[in-house]
Length: 276
Image 1 (cartoon, rainbow, N blue to C red):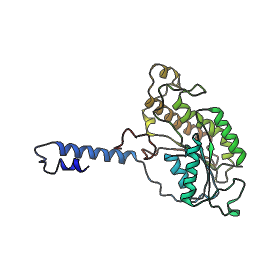
Image 2: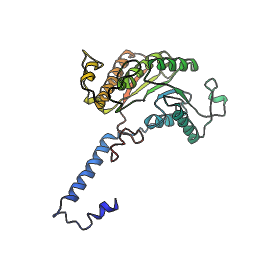
Image 3: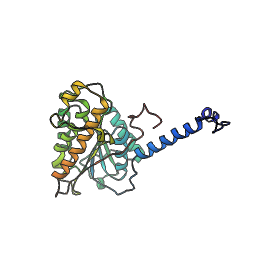
Image 4: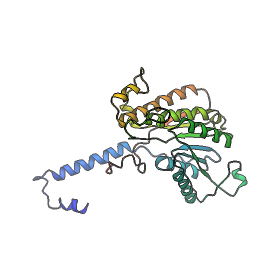
């Protein structure tokens, strides 16, 4: 940076365009980061004893969500494919919040432990894994208060398909989360607070189009596959499914929403574009 600034120390802005170009580029970066960064949530309500399931919570957005909700007293389940990373994340959260392990069958009031944060295995590339996870969670807990469908994949391998035969982005980002939500719905409806489903989507949905004669884009991807388009398609599906489920739950205490957090540091999604 010092070398870059030294180039302009004696520069005459009327004899060279470099200072103006540098200022323009710098300004554009600031504008893009401001527009894409999303908003901060000022809410600090406590969620003592509420059971929260967060998918993809071993890093990035999911980790920060889990940490913030654990700090508010929630009992957090990190639903992740990489168990080593998930268990490490759980330890980090516990260490930072000075908490101890609390068994699901214990009440917080009867224990010295203040927080519950534990990892459970979930591979969204497999519907069977989703079913196994749902069976385990519904067996461990009598209810679920919040489900945050955060996990996702972007820029996946070219034309990769899951064991179930679906395009990778579509199954991980949308189909498996939709299935998980349906499987956990009865437990969510048992929540005294009414239950809440939050789907994490992205601005990329605006660039996607769905062919309702081929909604899974099987024909399209067979001819012209691009990971960027596949990601956008999956996020549009998430948005439409959120609206559908919200209509289905109208008149019940359960709330269904989606959110677009914008570009977030720590996700690794933009490691190719370090300036942003």
